[in-house]
Length: 357
Image 1 (cartoon, helix red, strand yellow):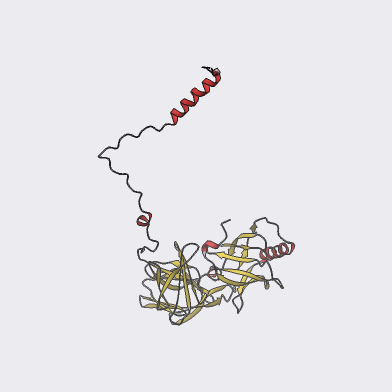
Image 2: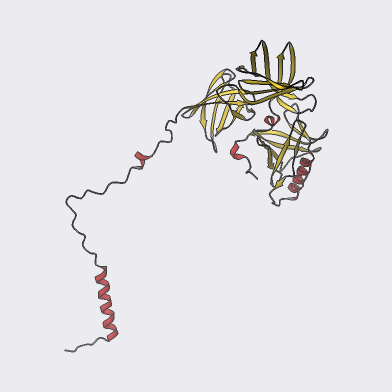
């Protein structure tokens, strides 16, 4: 018989292979304990998931929307509004943020209400009310009216009225004023010490008869047998809550790459210049309106867009006051010359405003 002798390196390879095969053998599992409980099943996603339509706790809030009182009760996917003496049930609709509700009045007019935190907006028939501000249990918060010749100032906080004139710089105060809401505005009445004051605020553009500053309400005051007239609300209320699209620069119509303007209650203006986003502090006083030097992004665009943007920013820097025409267009003026005409577009949710800059 012939015997073959493997080379030493081959024997080493065989030994290594044997060790490898031995290592691959699976060790037997220890016997299961007779008392061991079976592994728990994973929790059912269907059973543990919270339904998206779970009923939310009901809550109520009162708002002052530019002098219009709005009481709202939120419950589940509905918001019940009390507006101008009518109760409306609105249904939740998709919103990028916050909560948006839509419905109709008894006459078929569309109504929408959007809220996020303490911010809220109301629109009726597509017309946006001034920004809604939360109020206490009753009355207005931070409402003012003023008039000239004779000069007077009325301040309303909750149910307290404060009346000031140059002849009487120390305010006269009335407590527990009674409010009556009307379709076109509201009325206030208070009496104390044999002296009564009656105030009627009516929605509609009112211009200060000395400065020309526009305000959202016409106000009449009956006091001590005299009737005084003036304007109510704040000028900023006519600007916030929507985006304004520029349709004319100086005497030229803007057809493409139209700049836009937006305003917030904190005194900031912003928008699209035709190529870049821009922002500017807003100087709004009882005497006029102006824009500080605008800051903007630094993108490059087509020549036409860049020319439009430069013309817009140049015009913006010249603005000294503003007004509105009969169609509701915003007129930005340099003295008596209108340098920018902008039309009001659809209401803007707060989350679509440009970032703070």
